[in-house]
Amino acid sequence: MDGSLEYLNRLKAAEANEEDGGDRMLRHLSGKSSKSSKATKADKKNFLVKSMAEVIRVDSEQEAAEWETHAEVEYVERDTKVYMMQSESTPYGITKVQALSVPDDKVANRKVCVVDSGYNLGHPDLPDGTVVTGSTGTAGLLWSNDNDGHGTHCAGTIAAIGGNGKGVVGVVRSGAMKMHIVRVFGDDGSWVWTSGLINAIELCIDAGANVVSMSLGGGGFNQIEADTYKDMLEDNILLVAAAGNDGNSDYSYPASYDSVMSVAAIDSNENHASFSQYNDKVDIAAPGVGVRSTYKNGSYASLSGTSMATPHVAGVAALVWSRDTTKSAKEVWSALTQSAKDKGTPGRDFFYGHGIVQAEAAALLLADESFTLSPTATPLPCIDDPADWFDSDGPQYTCEWYSVGSRCASYGSGYANGDGYTADQACCACGGGRVGAPPSPTVTVAQAPSATPSKLPSSKPSLEPSSSPSEVCTDSPENWSDANGTTFDCNWYGSDNRCSLFGNNFENLDKTANQACCVCGGGDDSSPSSSPTSTPSNRPSKLMSDVPSILP
Image 1 (cartoon, helix red, strand yellow):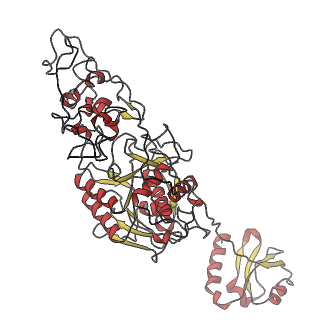
Image 2 (cartoon, one colour):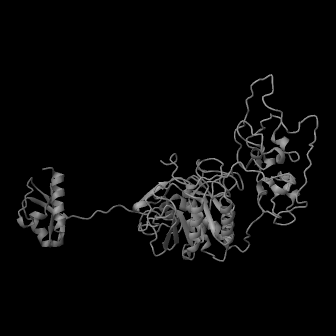
Image 3 (cartoon, one colour):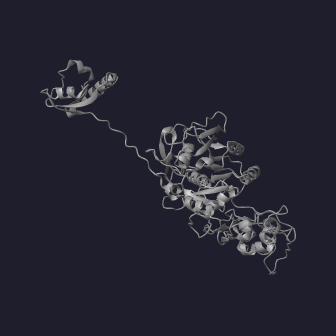
């Protein structure tokens, strides 16, 4: 009989009789004989043929010594237990965001809501049902199950238990982090309607959440959603969402709403992740490449995506806020962005936002008596994008041409060139372009020689012979200023690219600067400039993780 099979058969027989008691011993045989001289023990013997050894059970040290007197036995020794090598590790992201430098002894006064695919309740490295509650955001889906693993991974980054010798640690390590789980994704982790997402966040608030972590996105702008999230921020709810994984400058929602903190992803070397979306809505960055955390069925996994970056920021927000609960959600937001580690272009940029979130720096800033909510920001430069753009009527109609008078308002939304860009999208003067980011490749439009015009004459005014614009634009309302006061009038918006930076915000008298001011393309005959990346869409939100090209 095969030795290994013989061993397994006899081991099974021995384990079935362990209720008899006794110590488990190994005896090394001096000869080829594997036959015991003690028939009464025969049913408990297990052979290791290649090692010339046998597993026996004895009831005393005296019995073990008796075995050593047998001529066929060379020696007897104890059969000791061997354990799985389990140890706790600290994922690089936890160190990058300074989480371990901020005490988490007060986190019980905050609650984070994770809107995702569920939670592996019973995972040995996650808080249990004494501090974790949940709701079913989609009919028939139990919040305490997570067969996808995405939600459990995000929750672990926020609150994996430290000091237990297992797995990983989260931003909050004490096991006291209160969490509420709202499950909106099924086992396939596909999508949820915008209405379902709003409902999920309302469930979070009803459960007492202060911070909502949303590792999801997609869809398009929705006014109801924008208004709802604005009200939530005013009510001291901090919403945090993934910037998106498409590696382009498109807006992803809900992250791109002004009342939601948009999170980009970096790698372990603090480089912007290639998949992470970049635009003027990105507020902050956090680790999102190869992030190790808790996973489904009590396991662990390394995943990549802005989904993985988002819970770092949500966890840090709760951790920092727990040190002083008198602060508002807006103050916590401001502390996180002001204290972030600047990366990329100095100041805020499209790729990192204000920089990499830093827990210790934010906590110190929030505790500083001189801390102010909104310091004066240095305007970022705007770059026409594509560079050297001109419209479909020819190279004389450049961004410089559009910068005169009210040409943006009159023609900026039409005359897209061969690459599909209008002046409102390509030109800083019209509220487009790119702030703080490198321009896209120059677009050239090939034109075949023709003896006859290829299209009807343009209705735009000719560049020649007049050197001055024929249009007259009037600010409307006259003497308009924004919601921050009379200092911020149309003249103020006329410099330093302020139309592009702030023109869609700070509405007053039912108009923003982009609507009221000629310099921003508004005035008495204007309409709001459109953004190249905010085209409304009815696509539902989706998970923001698991980027295949990034995984090892």
